[in-house]
Structure formats: structure tokens, C-alpha cells
Image 1: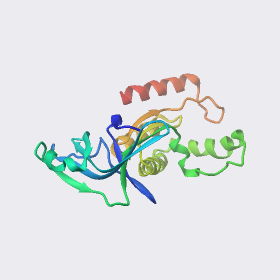
Image 2: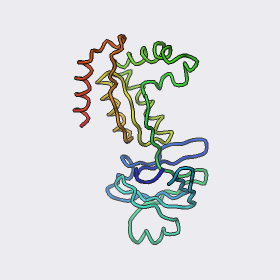
Image 3: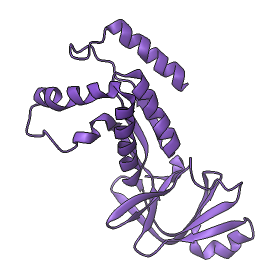
Image 4: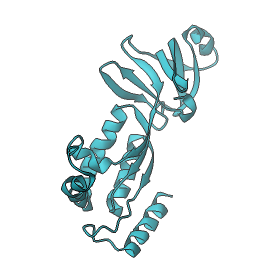
Length: 213
């Protein structure tokens, strides 16, 4: 974990929630926000660095500096900002990255692990994802999944949606509104229960790429 992502979350022992990140933080017309508290990060595998009383400066959604708290007065001479001090029970860390996530499966998380892959697909995945043809159903589940992801400290994610173009685009909008940086892919599948031809799937995928770009 490092600060290259320019996103950060604040965590408490029994709760982890997004406190700021690059798409939503410090939008007050260029006025900087400075978050003061304990910083935890890992620059190398198997090594964790704990930095008590540090400052993270955020301006226009970008992290501008990470400095020791003792430099506060010096930094005040260089910048105009508001200081937000975290309680001792919380700490700041770089946002987490989830490289493989199926948000459409959020509604049945934790179920069916006693089944084989094929049984789980037929009992849970396929019938559940068929409901994503309805945009309202997709919106409800995707909003919950993205919110939970952010509450867990994930500021960057790679999401695999479903075969449905409209609900895939809705997932993109939800992530954009929430300020989560993502890669969203529309699923291509010619399983007999999806009733999708290869040609149709390719056309829909091209539409999704064109819409997103």
C-alpha cells in the first residue's frame, strides 16, 4: 500500500469507513483540508510502517502532502487549510484495491459454499443475475455492494457486472457517484440459460466500451 493512488481511508478497530478519497474530498473551491492522526502504510511486502501524529493534506481531491504533525505551523505558512483531527481510536491508511469483484453476487454472499461450482452457479448465480435485466433490481443491489466495498476501505476495484448492458452502465454511474475508482466489465457468456448469442454479446460489449469512453 502506498500513496500513489492518491486516495485514503480512515479506519477504526471495529469499523472501517471511507473518510476521504480523490473524487469526493476537498471540493471547497481550492481550500485545503488537512487530516491529522496516525498513519499506517506498507511500502514493501511483509513490512508495515506506523506513523503517529501525521498530516495528510488534500486539495481539490488530490493528496498534496503527507507530513509529520510537528510541521503543522510551518505548513500553515505555505497553505490555507482546515485541520480535521482523528480520535486515537482511528487511523489513516491508503485505500485498498480489490482486483476481482462480482457485485451482482452481493445479495447471496456467504451462501452455497457447501456446493460444487456448477451447483452454485445453477442455484444462485444464474437465477440471481437474470434479475439484473431489470434496472431497478440492479441499481438496488449494486448500490449496496459498492457502498459496502467503500465502507470496507476499498477505493479502487475491478468489477465484473453481468451480461446486461443497461445494468452494467448503471454500475458505472453508481461508482462514479460514489467516487470509487473502478474498472467495470460487462460479462460475455453464451451459457444456454443466458439466451445470448455470441454476436449479440459482442455488440453489447462494444456499446458498453463506447459509452464508458
